[in-house]
Length: 256
Image (cartoon, rainbow, N blue to C red; front, top):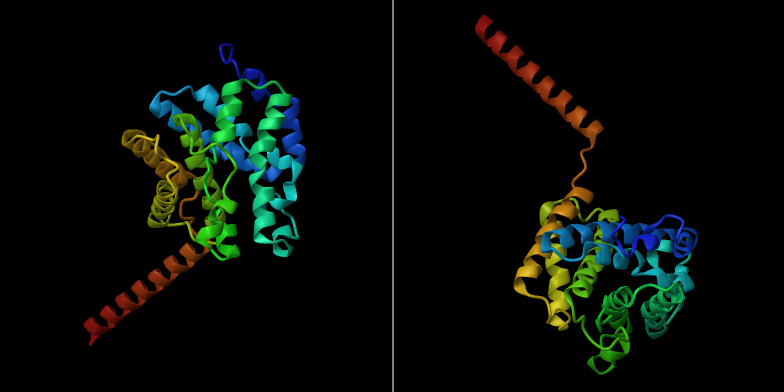
């Protein structure tokens, strides 16, 4: 990593990373998954993988200010249950500005701060908007407060991977992501939501295709269908029993 200008930020003992381990371990696990997928995409697209790796690792660092408001860090009570949709949205969306603030305080390069600041674009937080009643007149009250959609490929890739990974973990825990068609539907849904909200206008078809392909492979590796070995053994025993009964019937038939 001698030629990697972001190397010091990736060291295990870097102060900000140490803080993430202590305060937002769930977010850090998510960020590492996002980082690994982003690095593979960067390799395929011949992007600066060091830049994307660093940005992905720290993209949610601002959640340290309100860790309990984010699902991956919750261990009990969910504060959103007693909050209005608008307040919940304000607290959740501010993690982008908080991330930029922390990164600037720790002297991160401007391109990292820019990518992190843009990775949600001006996307609408659909869950809270729908909880509020899905009114078109109030739709903009539930958007991330940025200058608009991502303007470069790095922020676009981070945006897509972040949303897919977060949704994948939730669906898998609910038993809804074991089959290939489930994973493909998830990727399609994320792309559709972002395209419909005009967040991917700077993403070319070719880049989008590569991102889809890598995501498909990565989700298959992370969330493939598990085999229940006890059930498999029982099934095999049942098959053997039926086969033995069939053979016994044949022997009896020959004797008769």
